[in-house]
Image 1 (tube, rainbow, N blue to C red):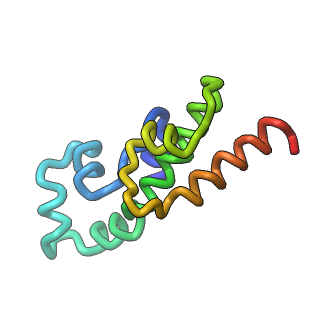
Image 2: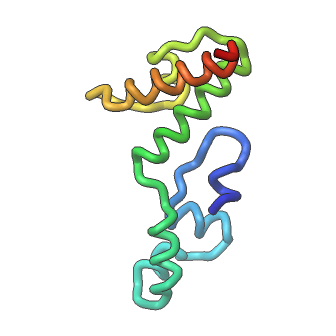
Length: 109
């Protein structure tokens, strides 16, 4: 799980399907959803990303990428780079927090 979370590049959502695909296990999702692998299913579900966790990881990634590239960072640009559709603007506060933390880190204040 840590290998998947810390993989370079744009974050991928950690789910049963992705784990099965990476492990090369055919029909892993079906096997986990049946009664054959209860401990495996419990472990995967305990460590799988919720939609909000995955979106936050993508936001952090996009802010870091934009900072590395020297781009002007705005909420709209971060949402666009992270491909986040947030009509209620629930994550705008988190985005602003990330931008402020990155700016503080960059300036040393």
